[in-house]
Length: 421
Image (cartoon, rainbow, N blue to C red; front, side, top):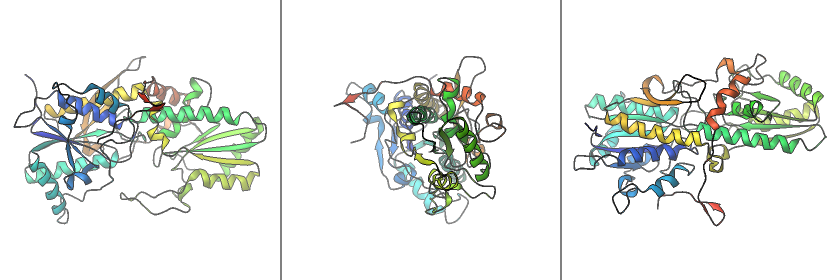
């Protein structure tokens, strides 16, 4: 017997964009288009700019948008969406109040009014740690008021810092970009004989998974930075200077990778100097670890120093998509619909790495309350004893996630991407 979605469904994207978040959205759409639309439900709506936009009734009919004139899924549009970076529906960084608090009542009633208006009883939220917090709070509130609701968190984050899941959709493509650009930087720096230090700053506030990807080439192509510094280990300027001097004694062109969130023993981030306040979730807006280290190294060693902040391209470089990442992202989205149709609620979809020598994964789910607001750090076994690099084991573990490439559609010599009219 076919399992059906209860009522209509709505999907949103939240937090920082990735090169694969739209692939997950496409997976949810594909799953929902397999549902039969009736007066009772089966239709999929989309939130423009996440929960924030939904509260303003900024909602679109995705079932209609991705159904062709012949009544079948619009494959051309869905494939284009899968290979489009950023968040096609738009995103937000809104933190919902405590569902048990009196001050939060008006907020949740506003959300509930939208659910009732569109007969929504199924909710998919594609996002990272803070987005799972939204799913957890909505689960508590809808149970509290007795509104029948299926709520599922659908993971995405280039930080790869959600617990339980082997890795997160979006990480593979970002890691592929970091590993590739690092090789290109290494080749560029190697053409000169003048002693120089190049510091590459990579995203990662609390977990260094993305920075760890800078070293993947060590076990594949042979190209990797001299050192890799992660927020999982306390950063010491004296040890850093000693590392650089040792590397410069071996060759003139030293390249290191640092996470934006590296910090000193007292917890102060290296890039906190000149910080521009905090975001909506209380995270410090870091000024830049790379630039701070560049100035310090220049004063200490007196050699040529430059810093490179990879910045937004880490999460939006669709020209370096990982086929593995995109295919898994679509699978996760479709699996979320299957789980919802089976009545699963209050859970987050996860990727499980199956045992064996060949890389294989399965998609499952775990209670979102166990995941929200917790950070998965880089495994201790993946960091060397000195705390200034990752191990070969780490590189081999990450390598399959960046495997494979996908062709893009080009128009006038440039990639063509999907966008809502």
